[in-house]
Length: 440
Ligand code: NAD
Image 1 (cartoon, rainbow, N blue to C red):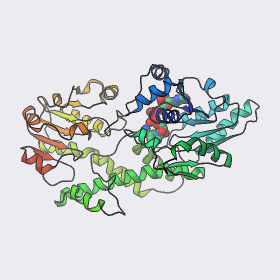
Image 2 (cartoon, rainbow, N blue to C red):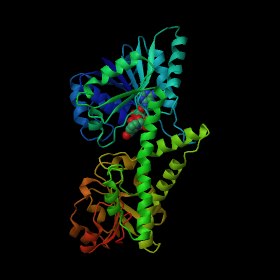
Image 3 (cartoon, protein in one colour):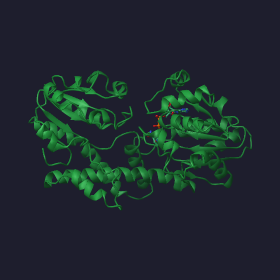
Image 4 (tube, rainbow, N blue to C red):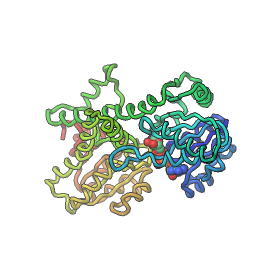
């Protein structure tokens, strides 16, 4: 089989590389010439654990190629994945301009039957728009080429993307013909060997599944954040409550960690897009509106604790920040809660000294030199007045507390991810402020 993956970002690069890894010929296409030139030299545009080695290995075997030309790549492809961005438009809906531009180009260059697959997260009805865009171009070319459009939403998690792709919890595929089902089953066969299920369904249901999944996960986070905030008021400890409820099999212990709000390129935009889809169709997603509101509030919680501790006077204070990316094991800074925190601290007249194991380059693109970037976590503490834990990188879980105390002007830790046990930290001589815990 020959496949083309259009869009070589977090999703497209992982998708293309993992298909190549099981022996399929893959061309990854992107309009970003620099990205493709770098990939051809083995330089990756993103940090994703394990990805670099797989890209280099499969490229050297000739199964994984990179190109800027859809015109050269599309002819003869059995399957073309559309994996370009679907950022939020001004009104919150998913902006489909990149997806539809690719669909149009596919229609301009395809020369035989193929399955065109939307892997980008797209609202219900998009596959039909893709079909029309392709059909339009074929009509302009006065050609009758049969094709199918399928929806195959991606569920990988940044930071664990390779494992998620190679050993998926499930693969969801929306199809509208038996032929497309056969092609997609054949393509995914190598990933199903150890019992990983593939679920075929109609296209609108597949499109909706992705939004429902991300919205459910965002709901779990906002729910726990709401509970955490109430725990603080009522004198309960959310760490205990989490263990207490997580042991109920109906609830489960995953994804119920409170923190400083969800971020990243998916949850914020997908929750917004689903609210908008509903509104456009005369329905109000009441739970998701609350999920968003809680998340916005939660991004302010750590700053409020910091500001209160210094009696509303952060002017001239230097704050050490451990972690910048929206979660560990990625350099993705899109919608990272750290950005909101940094803005608030700077607006209050404070300074930020930050360290992140991989996201500092990405952060520099967004916030430039508004903060000081440090070479390691301890350098960030020098002459700082407090430490904020913003991303729960494994590197930060068992630090040298004596050294932290020596370096900080005041022994104060604000733990936005509850990675430390507050009581233990207090015993070590620190003031400790967690999320939803009562030992502040
Ligand atoms: P990304 O921004 O990292 O990558 C998108 C790529 O598409 C960029 O490299 C861009 O240059 C390229 N592109 C744009 N227009 C193009 C065109 N006309 N032709 C060729 N390439 C083009 O995006 P991402 O994070 O990989 O997300 C892609 C989609 O997958 C989105 O819809 C997203 O919601 C969804 N998704 C993302 C994740 C994730 O964790 N990042 C997980 C599941 C689903």
